[in-house]
Length: 303
Length: 252
Image (cartoon, rainbow over all chains, first blue to last red; front, side, top):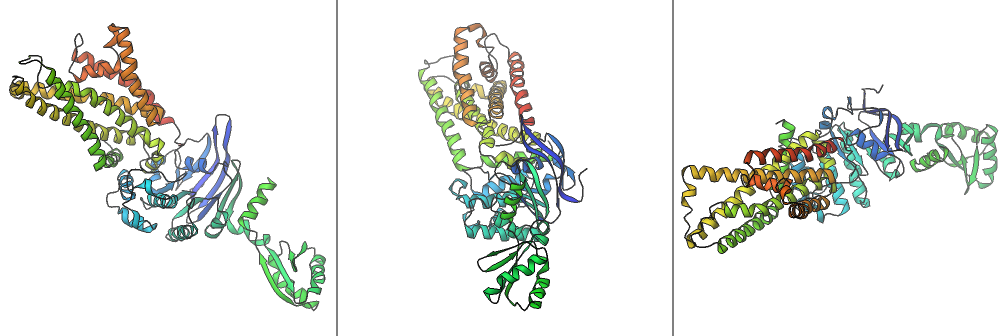
């Protein structure tokens, strides 16, 4: 069974649309307090999974728990969850402030100050403008502001940086990091893998509705996966340096005057010593982790 | 009413608190009521006994019904087309509460629209009646006043029935344009055609029956008959609408 000690916990969660299986027996956990990146190509089932977690659509089979309560009982947890699913959605002929007031009322909150929420997402100047006049980036910000109305423990954000310019992306990144620092759990999907790599400490990866990976960032990108990149003081020593590594059973390649030793990140100090013993001195020695993007494509190809 | 339904009602009511919405709805309703009632009186003969305080109101109810059907269908279906239903259902997890909230808020709006139509039509009637030598003052005294107010209440019930019809269409079609088109097509064209072709069933049809209810009954149809038949028709369309709303995935 799913575990109560996680903010999100699903086991065997599936969703079929007719004969088409959109999400296939997903099993993963998201720890409390983490910023979890939910990664996968278009149509991989990310939004469907998020909708099931929010009880907007019914599951076909499997179990799920959000903040300790079963997803079949949304009344028990949705008042502690904020969400923006598949883009922002508001009443176009009303202003940002009016929209937030309506949603706050519906959430049973009377003292909510829409202006402070708008200020939090950098939209204070346009709060009284009609929603239909907003740019895509402004709509995204308003969507995040609406997700914060209930001051939630868990934020579920689907593509929150979609349509934002680089400055906007950075602001949202800082906002999300700040929200996580106050103890919230954030479950976020995005196509901008480089962005997720910066802010997330936990990842759930999907492909075609199936789970590829669920776990901490270090397990995915760090540890033994890390490559070692060395450059000798003199170029003529490059081949000898490669031999030193090869003699110890390491895979090497020479690219652009650098020796790349695969999955040898933890051997940096030792490799430096081996080189010194052979009187080869290194001009540089660095480690290189595969990016989330590289890892994602690598895992996709292997599936 | 549960707290979440009460909150949903308050949220829905906020949507109506917009000057542009109120001006367009009450403005157009006021102008049309004035024209309809004024026209009815202008065609009436001097000292006509067929004209009373509610004659104009009964005529204006037709336009109020059409307006109500459109507003209710649109306000319900647009939650799907705007995608706001997913926001709302995260904040108000009970779909039942959301629906009660929407129905309560729209009922309040329909009540004020009916009252407003009644007031405008009464003022116009009182103004025009003097020129036609008809004394309407007795309609505002004693038992006659109670009858007049009961007529206004029935006007509200008949309009409310059309509103529920609109809400149900909005829930079933999930598109304001389709819901409004279907509602108007049925009320204005199909029922008229059926009523024309088969006069004996004309008054048994839903919209005609709602109209009879609004007019406190019709020839050959008692008020209770209209009330019972209206309830039956509303149940007939509301049950599948409620089932679909409860069971359907919110994937838009």
